[in-house]
Amino acid sequence: MNIKRLLISLLIIFLALTITDFLIHAVWLKPLYGATKELWRPEGEMNSAKYMAWLHAAHLLAAITFTTLWAVGFAQNAKASCAVKYGLFMALYGQTHTLISYAVQPFTLEIVWKWIISASVQGILLGLILYKVYKPKAA
View 1: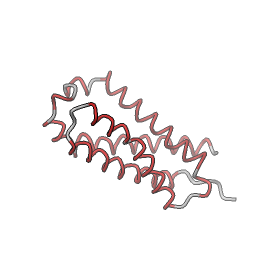
View 2: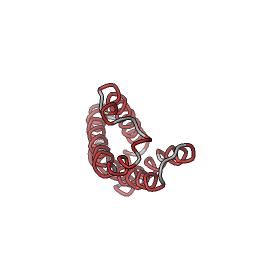
View 3: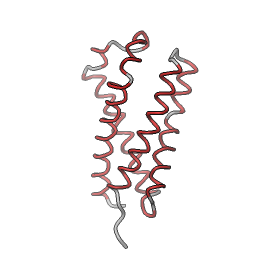
View 4: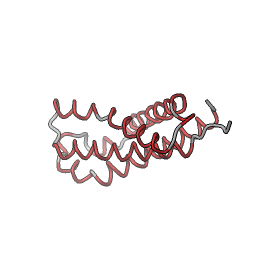
């Protein structure tokens, strides 16, 4: 494992994850969240430094996990198709919590399905980005 490439990849995945999450949640799904505002913290509270720090910590943890697992388990002999599968399966694994949340919280099915679809697309995109950025050393 190349630590320099790992750190660069981690930073790029963190940024890509943060940007795509913003586009998914603050742009695409914002109307759905507004229609179900009783389920969420008030927007001012959610955007406070306290809770934004938790969101960024989650993005960092996801980036570390996603990037490191790729680097130690898949990168050496990977093809683009492997990156697509890796990103999709990592995303789907993460969405198990969405289904559990739906069982115990009053989310709408529309939100649940849009979370699963957007996470799947995001996972594939992150897998492809990681495939391009974290390349193993040539033999």
